[in-house]
Image (cartoon, rainbow, N blue to C red):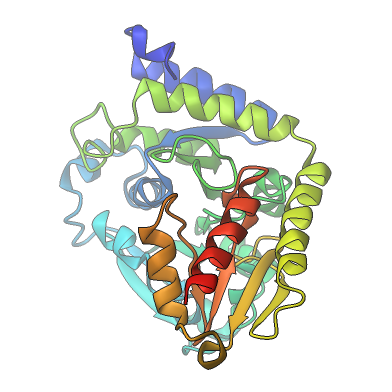
Length: 337
């Protein structure tokens, strides 16, 4: 990224060449680097709505009379539906908060349907129509199916698994499992739709103009993908397991703190995390006060709450050895109560 910052290049050419390399490495037709996964969703929605039609592109996000409906499962959550509307898409939710049926999915498809968007998390797929069936329906009706898989790395195979199943586009975060630039995202899939993403994106002055991805992020994500593909993923999981085991051992004899191994992660990734549950009365401090003091101390430690009296420790965000710092800070606070 530092090297890229010192040169002036054609962004389109750099995107095309970086995308060609990433597509080759990940066994996909094409790839596009966005400024985050959410921007990747916006551009993917725009691609489904406009294709390479310059007149449609110029009208976004105003899509009246255009094929603009995007089907989503209501039970998958609505956190990112704004990314659909941002591109001019009309969200068409199907099913209930608990589940949706194949008939409901098929019944929602009609001439105004521009795509199906799947928010993919293993623990949220239970109520959705099975992905294989969604893909089969999409193919039958000629409707693009896009998967938001922002946090679904690991496993590394997801970089090509979904598209080999038949998904048209799949979107990953550049800064989560890939550990690349935080302000980057990766869109993989059909060549024509990737071209339509670029068609709507910066440096052109249309819907994607504010979502500029710089030469530094392009170079950085290219390097991050190569690094990730070359990792010893088995050893990486062993490192996570060792860190979780350290947390469990550190609190094994504490009658007021119960530590256990949780699996999978909050994003449904196949990796462990430590969960600590506190006897607040016995410790003389609440979970929330502990979290506040951890974050306000030196070094600052940020942990996620779990339930009413617990907290999560995710080894994916720790460098080797930092688990000792976290334990030391927690015990330091508990001793001072």
